[in-house]
Amino acid sequence: SGGGRHQARRIFQSVFRVTQRDAALRNAMPRNLDVDLVALEDAYPEMCARILGEVDTPADPILRLQGLVADEMTALERIAARMDEVDRQRADPPTWIEMRAMAKLIHDFYSGTESIFKRIAVQFDGGVPQTAAWHKDLLNQMNDARAGVRPAVINNYLWALLDEYLDFRHFFRNAYSAELEWVKLHPHVAAMPETLTMLKDQLPRFFAAVGAARAQNGS
Image 1 (tube, rainbow, N blue to C red):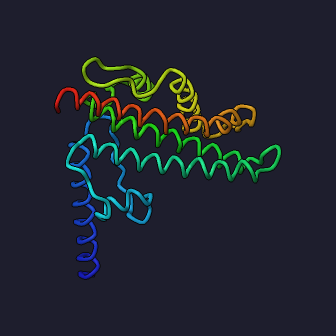
Image 2 (cartoon, rainbow, N blue to C red; image 1 turned 180 degrees about the horizontal axis):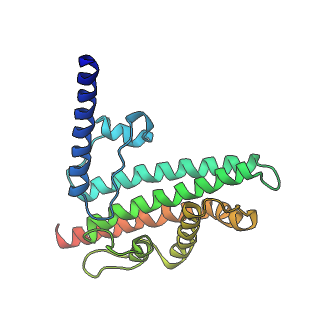
Image 3 (cartoon, one colour; image 1 turned 90 degrees about the vertical axis):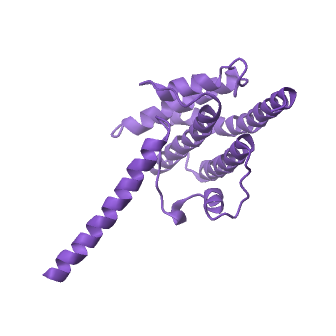
């Protein structure tokens, strides 16, 4: 009927406009910096607060970056708390459902950490690496200082811990039918509190060093 065709046209036009906005947004973003469009109710609370204007956004780009990183760290703390809850309540050995839940939390923990590193790379390094192995290269980039630009973001020990998380995330994303093994999963579960503590220590140190350098240079 005419009404049905008119309704279908309105739906198509709406989807087309959203697709155009999505494409324009992606084209404006640095390469390899993902754009994830999510419903507001599905975003984590700190992101919602910023979207709704409930949090002041500094004009200074470094202070703004620090605020975003602080939000990401709060999300990582939430993931680590959920991991602790699952680990304390799991069977011994864990069921496959419990292992799957813990593997997803490990995946999310590294993805949140990588999100922080992307933001830092965009702000200080001109963007994330434009390579096929950019996930690994980005992690390596955070372990290196850039003379006259910024100090290293993480030290060698934290780099090694996160490199193990990155390798596990790659396995988890690509081994769809592989069975999870507790002997391989458990080290990542056990290392999460230490890894989070080191991130909470080293990221503020990084920003403190950046702030000191800016003050010295009068910028």
